[in-house]
Length: 104
Image (cartoon, rainbow, N blue to C red; front, side):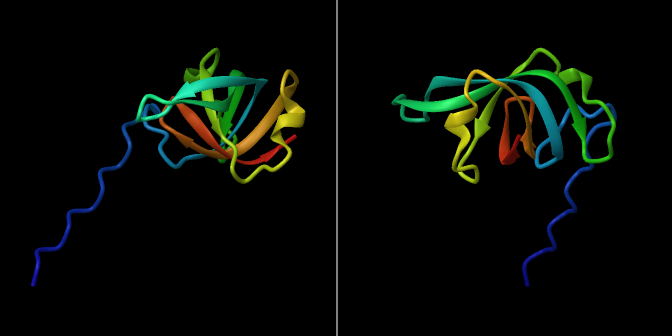
């Protein structure tokens, strides 16, 4: 039988690793062009964070001022929010982006 996999390491204290962390970020949504892994330009969305908080309600100050790429597959009407200040709820992936589950 294969050896049991070691348990995943706990995230470092201080919240540097937000992969899969539920969060709510507020900021201005913009339409952007991004290069995918193949180097092709794709249309996408980004939010410049003015405030962010985790599911526990604690502020995620390290995200303030950062531009997060928005994974918007779950939000059909995201284009109608471009240029507006919005609050996006979803899962963070690192300090690079958020998979949006809802937008308001």
